[in-house]
Length: 527
Image (cartoon, rainbow, N blue to C red):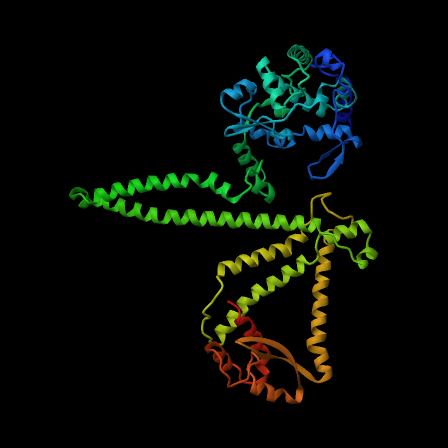
């Protein structure tokens, strides 16, 4: 505690010593033009924070500047940035044009000076960095913010070294058109004389590096966030808006590989047609092994591509469901009375019906295997139509995920409501309990009280159309009903399919009807 207190006092002392890196109140602007400028550093009215929420700038200008120039993601993996770039100055804009790079404007500071293929992302320099008052009243009061702002200024000192660079920046919208070359050079000279850009505390450590390669940043970010599903899937910057783009960029090399393998197989075929190589045992063994390899390789690539496709579909589906839960608007009088109105809205957005639906689907999928096991015990033939095991198991995994994950505690401050985060899960369980109680009263207690049992009955609607209805059969007529109807509710002796006849042979006593009826309902599905 004492060490932390001393550290805070030293930091406060350092902050009090900070001063703007320039003295000219106009900054690099043309003095003649600056007289007509009402506000050199206009700020936006609102901005989006990292949680994509709209925040007013007037509420906290310092927080806006911090969010606007935030490079914390790069600082988190600073120890690995040597894989993505070199610790040297970025190339000026005219050099970027020489190597045919397209300048892409971004308002995300942690994408500033990040390049990919023939593009380089650059964040326009905000005018408030040229405002002496903003530096004196806000930036200089926070050493971390001061280092970040100085680092961003340093990046533009790298990029704008020549009049042609300033012209390119002005035409590309990277810098105000009111800035002249003379004013810029004077501004740069003063900044470099006041900022120790070689000292570690004067410049944010991100700006120890210049240009950074995007695909390597994606790799580093995924490796350092392997346990966080969303970050691992999307990487540092997710650049795929269609599945076709993903497969084109990541599997385009497969076509060249297959072309190369085809050339080798053709050469081997020609070689095997010659007398010398036909009798060469080593060449025959190599040809055999390579042929098997070329047969297995396309299958492996296909399975890999299918797996990645399913993985992305499931990930995007779950992300969409999460957003849908957050945006759904529905209010009931019960929830308004039970908890505060604002939290009631948020609870409804969480969709309490997701957990019951997932639980029901999970029971259905597991029940499929129960029915198969019972069919096997009853020595029934295999059905003609049967669901693939891999799809059923995949569905079970998804439903388990939807049932289990809502109980996982969110990060500190990540809950959407002021009360317990699992309230909507408990609400879903209550829905299941209420449905179970309703079923018990409707299907068990009331029939027993009134002296009847429920049986399904097959109705012929004509033209080959059939349907089922639930009939109330008095207890004294139950033996006759079970003797004249099969488990599906059809009169015995009527025309039935082979599968229905096999089911009829299973029904021996009225006591078995409930079990066989359940089996019949499931066996009618593709199992």
